[in-house]
Image (cartoon, rainbow, N blue to C red; front, top):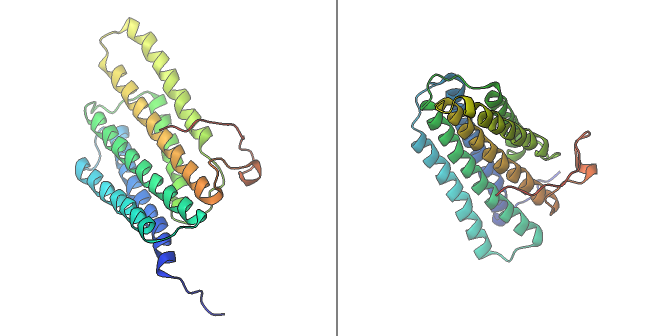
Length: 230
């Protein structure tokens, strides 16, 4: 069987997915190192600004490539969806990287590394979201579920922690560790929102919609609506 010949235009489109996968792997690595700092209060020394700059360059390369393709081609609907989707994904991933750096730097201000179990639960949920997203962005699997349930878990934990801290603050108003916990929780809650946006863009690229139908979902997932985080 003869091989399918690809045009330069088709290769340029596929390059967006390849570069997005590369960006996702870089962000996942940054997140894992940040989580190590949260869990241990130390971890391998990292120049977080330099690491974030690398993510920024990867993001910029994708966005610039999108603009180049759109300026040189008369786009089909599917192609436009592909380009706009990966452009948005690049921007969402870059924001997650920013928050990962914030997470590590904030944790370094509390080097004891002793956090409530709720913080560690949020860390696990966040890592789980990326463990699902990265293979999809690398083209190793199809998107078959959204991340609403994981995002709801992050939101729930953040809200519960907020109430716990407010109640405890009345008894221990000068406890700075409570404030650090709340800041970390808020940072991870925002990261979860951006991860959900990545998943929604992957669905958009695949279907033209931002939500999977019940038929397209992994069995057991609910089909509830959600307003995407920005």
